[in-house]
Image (tube, rainbow, N blue to C red; front, side, top):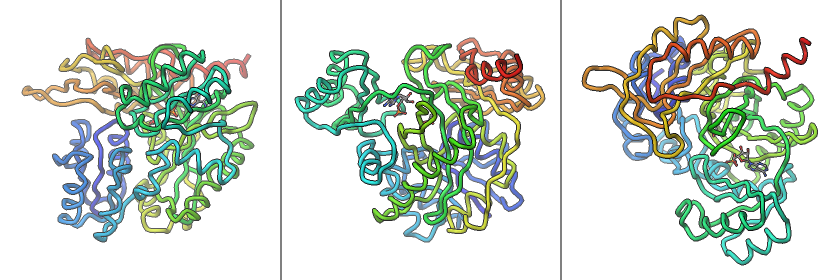
Length: 431
Ligand code: AMP
Ligand code: GLY
């Protein structure tokens, strides 16, 4: 099969790595890809949001399966013109991608179909938002409705802070049109996990889970980022909680999307807050998480191409489950100094091979490019994800940091505590 993978991040590097292993993969194109993928695929210079360019390319090359990595093309609706032209696509339609593209849409679905989530209101007018905030009290959460690269959420500790955030978003100052509407919701005090499920419009199957680390600093302090590291599976996910998430959140959402006339195909990523053992939906994404994907791909034992193709062709029912190694995978993101604000660019990155010599380690690239000496340089905020497999979270963590320490990059930094919650639980069990 000839494949086109859309995107250029660490998630896509991990997907390309796994897809290229499939016995059915005869050719893999990545648009636009990154230098880390060059050994696995042919990178073509089409931007991930160039819907027409991507569609024309896929038709022209007679692509058998298009895999969409990032949210932007999905929310723009890349799957629709592709399907209209006879292509098979792994990823939801524009209407189904509203689960990620509009927080308000998702909250309305939760309310209508009785899916557990924080109590909320949707607002376009400042005075109505202020009245709701004053009535609810702090802490309280203010969210831009649209896509804001993981940064459109303010957890306000006081009513005053909440009002400032709501005004900032609604005025268009904070997130432009993504903040023209806001969701204001109750603060949920719990621990979060990422839960992934696959769907083909009819059948839904659990994939696996992970736990991300969204704050930039050790101990979960500082501003939110796209994710500074993850491990899989999430230590919180007991058998009982898994069942609750499937029965109370994932399956009702799939039924809801079908009832609303936009059945969901692709991967549904639920951000779940666990409060006293019960799951609440924080948000949906309609693609794999980054860096969660890098850890999950290290554990996946099935042929990724077969699995994604089943989602795209309505044959997911042929699988009884998706198989993963029992090992733990842990990924540490190395970011450029300054991230998530403006960051350093252009520094040379060495030691990638030495890092990958550590047993069980894969380094996935994201914001990288090559300079005129063919050296790898940093050009993005999140630049590498150093990912390791181990028998325990502690072992995976030790290997990942052993590999991180072999990377030679002056502008790079990372959190030193990825997986700390799970390591603490592991240590308590041994003691
Ligand atoms: P989101 O972009 O919706 O994932 O929100 C970013 C982060 O804000 C989440 O990962 C949570 O840690 C936090 N968050 C979002 N909504 C809530 C909530 N209702 N209560 C507590 N924390 C929240
Ligand atoms: N790691 C968070 C995300 O992919 O949205």
